[in-house]
Image (cartoon, rainbow, N blue to C red; front, side):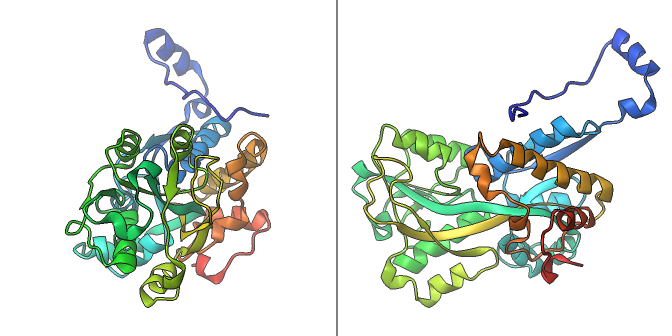
Length: 343
């Protein structure tokens, strides 16, 4: 089995190396450097997209993907649409907002035009929204967020907007008025929660999350969710019916004995994906898609979380056309392609 932990290939430098390179066939020197933007460490997209980059860098010697794990997906999709970055994480919800020039795209006049330049490589489950507290905080429900320090997600992100709406829908509490919406990135927020500087920490991620698993080893934690009597409210139904969203449960015991919940927690799930520009080379995208799923199949025994990353899930909740290279690859892998994924 090939290892999933790979060293980055370095470029040869120096006079002697340059002389050697000059003697090699031109094809042997071809390597295209490609930038991929994702969310910060501790998030599912970072884990999946790091795995994607590692597989491509290992198995396709003509390409090297360099990861950027800073900034928000809102900015990343604009950069891919403008051709400044090769790949990034997006989501069906974010794409719908971009197409309709709403929310964080409201003041960007070119948003619909730029959205039309994006193509899906593949979708994957980002996971479920974890709303975590330490048991020692005494917080047992969302309405106790009043006056607390809460991380909803990075400012301007789709996660922030989702959690802001969820807290208001369930409790009537408004971010910035009834509680402090702490402005941090993903990595800094995880560290801040670990240090006890946040009262409530929100993160859409596959369970068990490495960040929360680490905390739960030595600390009793609780997950807050949507009360059963509010599941049929118009506000919650509107949140759960957005593109790429739905209701889901966070099971009892998935974080071990220190997870104090005695019942499954009802929360939101979300689908995200890797997107590229419409002008990306078809053969390159085809080769990358095939290589990724072949690599994932090899790694599943040693990385159980990869069980959810399948060719069939690549078109789940899709509302953006597949890139022609990805479309061809997924068809060859036996995936039924929905109309929404075709141009």
